[in-house]
Image 1 (cartoon, protein in one colour):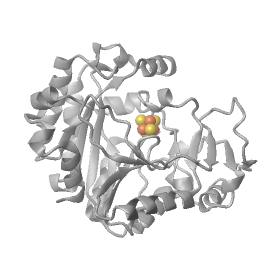
Image 2 (cartoon, rainbow, N blue to C red):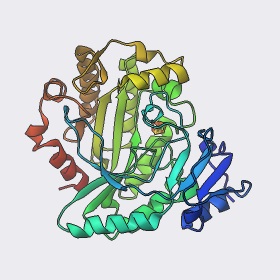
Image 3 (tube, rainbow, N blue to C red):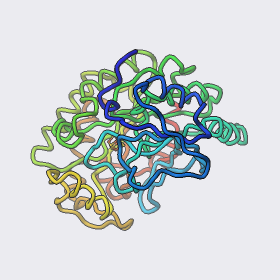
Image 4 (cartoon, rainbow, N blue to C red):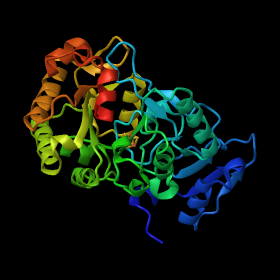
Length: 364
Ligand code: SF4
């Protein structure tokens, strides 16, 4: 049996709802973690209070909606993609992770009733066959962080092969390409990795994420196999020496990838609700970037002062443009003024962000 990646070796308990105990995901988890005896929860029972740690894997029968709109913000330019909700939480412990403020507990939850997921997706995609969807799984968890245990993304790409109107983004900070050979059409899957300055990766991503070099080597393997990839600079963080750091990361990108290998690159300055700041200061007291010069935006989130934000995002955009990227670049949750100052255009100039990213994803 292949060894589990380091970020999964800390799992010490497995709990499953009785209703999903015989699903393919439950069987795989039992195979991969033979030293753990799963606890079964009867219908209607819930996890005992106190079992809220990230070393617990909980395979759950999920009863909510699987396909949802991204919780963007109405006041800023949002990219309008849809989430396929496959689970919650992540064991990787990036200091800036929004999930620590978003969810009450840190249990690694996986929606194991995939038959319900497939049925919902089938209904949605078949009810509007002419409509295109740009979807992703990396909002409430990392798309691939549990892949070695669950094979979830592999199942998903296999299922979506029937729907050429759907383009799936798999966003991650680990390297797991085990789903690749289940893809029918590489133009409909966009593997994506988070990018940051090397200092931030080392200090704030807590050592269990893949390094930048590994992420980019994986992106290159995907490009060689016919996929286009996405890169996400989010959050861009202000720290002493940020220019050298982000410039180095951009150099590394172009050491591994050509512009035509890249579908799009997002850039978003670090932003947070007050709750997240409290979580970061309690959980990661050495992380000093939260004490920067922030102002409250019209959506209630704290953002770096606009001139500093524009300076950083423009620096990064200019470097990326120097390597041959241009229409692939977009900003997360920024106003038209900031778009203009950073990229010299607004989403309207591109035909609207939603349409533009759809076109980039589907390579129109
Ligand atoms: S990889 Fe993403 S989801 Fe996981 S801890 Fe880091 S920021 Fe959060």
